[in-house]
Amino acid sequence: MLIRHAVALVALLGVLSSARAEEFRIEDVGSPPNWDVTALKPGTIAFSDGAASASGAANLIAFTEWGRTLPAQKKFLSLYPAYSEPTITKAASADTPAGPVLEKLEMYVAQARFVVNRAPGSFNFARYVSLPFLEKIDPAIKHKLIAATDVSPLTDPQGTGNVNPDRKWCTGRNPLICIESTYKLEGKIPLGVMLVNKLRDTPKKVSDRIDFQGEMSTLPAADIDQAGLKELTGLDLPVAGVLEQNIFYVNQIMKFGKLLAVFQAHPSEANKTVVTAYMVLAIPESVLDKKKDFEKVPVLRNLVPAQVLMGQSSFNSGDSISAGLPKYARNEIRTIANLLAADK
Image (cartoon, rainbow, N blue to C red; front, side, top):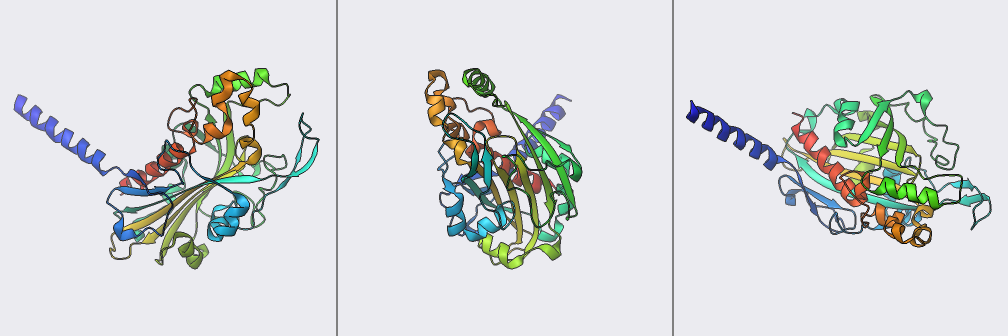
């Protein structure tokens, strides 16, 4: 009996070790070339956001420069192809009068590529357009389904410019889900936010949570821009499917966000699929320019927004947004890769 239990335990440990071994790992590759699919190591995600690792500072690129130098990215990774920096109406502050101002944006662009040991035709993309799938990607973010009629009118400064001229958000695609989400900032950041609000002499307070609205969908085959997506990924391979999440309203810190995963046939193996994934977040320059406000107070010098967003602050913690964008993006994409590989 004891021997049988020992054998069973060894077998179980072997299964668990095998499961862990099959999980994807991130390999930072610096500036992304057109990654050679055949050079990708099994179980490896080639990842780039301009940082050498999750602990390094990622590169941000100005929205106008992004559109000029990487037009295919701007077309597919903006909220909609014709997106441009909006003119918003700002309230008066100690530094500036009230009035219209062009909202300049800085873009965080993470891109990754990995191979899933599944044929392109084996994916049921509609299964991923669901709340359970979204909840598994980042359990720290809480989601609920909403109707298209519950979408913010996008008329305040946070939403200005984010109305889609091609279709109303949360309509016009099937399958599609409309989502309202909340993320409670973690670690020491809420304490820092409380101190900021006590020290700021303004009626508008910083929130210790990020609230956002978005949609998740997969493109019907007839709507897939084969030529355009091949240009985006740099792979002249048939596009089998596209999974897309648009975040069109965020209460603070960010202007919009997008997650796009493009599934393409493997160039030489019919039972494998190449996935190129992108995570893009637009950050207003005004958020990054708040350094002087925080440096005036010694205890808040490590809460400078740019440092926190780039994961360069002692306030960073956890694996979600509070960890900083470099670590957050790596964790999100790795989780998605593991979920896709496990969904047999």
